[in-house]
Amino acid sequence: MQLLGFDIGSSSVKVSVLDVESGETVSSAQYPEREMEITAIKPGWAEQDPELWYQNLKKACQKAMAHADVKKDEIKAIGISYQMHGLVVVDKNGKVLRPSIIWCDSRAAQYGNKAFEDLGEEWCLQNLLNSPGNFTASKLKWVKENEPELYSQIDKIMLPGDYIAFRMTGETVTTMSGLSEGMFWEFPKDAVSDKLMEYYGLDKSFIPEALTSFCDQGTITDAIAEEFGLPTGIKVTYRAGDQPNNAFSLNVLNPGEVAATGGTSGVVYGVTDKNVYDDDSRVNAFAHVNHQMPTPSLGVLLCINGTGILNSWMNKNVGSEVSYPQMNDMAAGVPIGSDGLTILPFGNGAERILKNVDYGSQINHLNFNVHTPAHMYRAAQEGIAFSFKYGMDIMNEMGIKSELIRAGQANMFLSPIFKQTVSNISGATIELYNTDGSAGAARGAGVGAGVYKTFEEAFGGLKKVDTIEPNTAEVDATKEAYEKWKSALGKL
Image 1 (tube, rainbow, N blue to C red):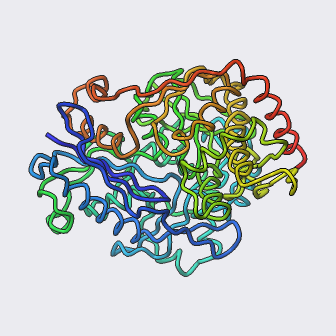
Image 2: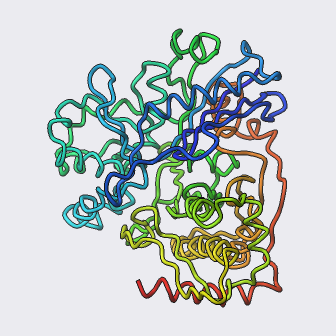
């Protein structure tokens, strides 16, 4: 038997085929090879066309299925991972009414900040575990206030993964975990929040039926099976936002366990069984994939918007003829602290850890007689690592300790400088595994379909490929560089 995992990112769409018996990925493909376009009509805006996700998914799926080891008739289930917090609105015919307002779009922050004040900070934190902030509910409020004619045509709202599942199956459903990420879920009531919906003046009928993350979520249509080159009758049996799914893909399911990613955005994600929150909502808590009352399982999520996207910007604008491995090699020739050059990576929309303010990225102490592109590459990676540390300190205050971090060997965690800097400055041991979001989604599909009877069985093929410990010879210099970086942040 084989399982299919989809990962709908903002940079690309990836598809993996997982062999059930060995637990190993037999084929994977992504499309496009370079980053997908994000449209920014105005500063702070970020939109993508859901049709782009769908077409890229079809191409990636066809590439993955074309591999010699993939046995089409043995595909048993599909799992879907997706970029969190995006808003897709459709009419009664299922037609998308506007481009999706995606996770790094900042336009709705003002509505969420006002809701936090009007509803009461204590009520929001105790019931939503967060400020309504710049999340999906606030994005929908923006549409209502600024595009009323379009708003009047809405029949259902969806998260990006909900939309892909809808296109595949024709079924309009969502998940409890997804609704909590969108800030629609009231935890003490274990239901959609009437109080928030009434405050924003939003129609509760817009929200699809909420299912658990692991269950039968619809069967792909015959037309989709033919279009994608899949057998008929396959069910979607798992759905999760990319960060809960990344934690799941690393077998991070129990209180005290911590996962991290370093894609377009960077995340540290810790699991707890307590309803915890940060008073300033700089770090957020959502329902984890295995959350089910009366036994809570929450993911405490630190998000840095400007992570891989900063490294990508450096690649395109500072070193257009240089590959990422070459950038890493050049940066390795620069001392820790980049000879005084510091970069704040906050150039991808409003940052939660900075209380939803969009300061933009900052390059500080650039010396034309000293600094080279190699310094820029190192300072960028150090700046991203230091932003992780800044947020992890907030998590520590909430009781989420990061002594051991699990991550997939991908994206920023392919960089020796980045992963060593994170370990040096946090004191954490980092374990890297042979997995990614699409492989995790495939494993989730196996659990949801009953192919795997337990979580432990689902992770039989998960293998540790590297371990990074703090380098004691570098710790003092790294801490000194961090203090200079934090001083630059304090001046904003």
